[in-house]
Image 1: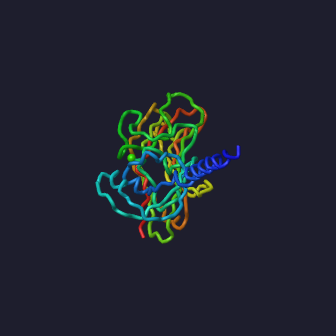
Image 2: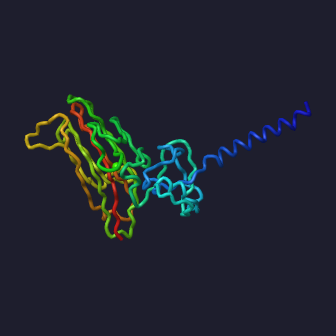
Image 3: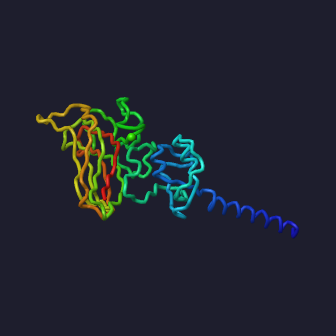
Length: 268
Ligand SMILES: [Ca+2]
């Protein structure tokens, strides 16, 4: 019995050391999200929606894998990267003075928060089979529905951004494509500027099918549209860019909207 004690202790110490290694060292990875967004490629260990907590930041780290992802083949380059400790739940993306993956080219919502009763998805083909506005992917808020009465429903997404106080001009720009069974008022695509508590600061855009005769047409496709808006008065704050596609009332006929190329231009 007494001879087994040291062995048991050694096994326990070994298990404890392995557990410590798994908890503290195993999950640590180096990642630079803007680099990923530019490359449009995420390494296979990066789980969309995972929470990445910044640790030693910034630290020098070889970027050979990032260069390989971009296809440049340049190895050995060194750049300051952030070190993140992945844990299990939602995405942690500190607000930046830029929209992170505004083209949705990571193929996942990533830094975009999203929700609602209607579909939220990142698609490489629109529901009619056409490609996104640019690149390989775009976001879809809502899904095609039959041209009949539906309950009130919404799909939304947002990203928080920092608007630097020394900005001389701040502009947000995006493209969107509304397909609506109903007329504006009953159904709409909306973009808003909000506080981080979701208090409305500015209605950036409300759009939908708005014919003079006010007669709805099933699955009316408004095509890709571009829009930009001056946000300079809000420089110096952290704000929320909120996108929503909404069947406004019970009995509405439905709407779905594609979004791509969301960007923030800051002039100093
Ligand atoms: Ca895109």
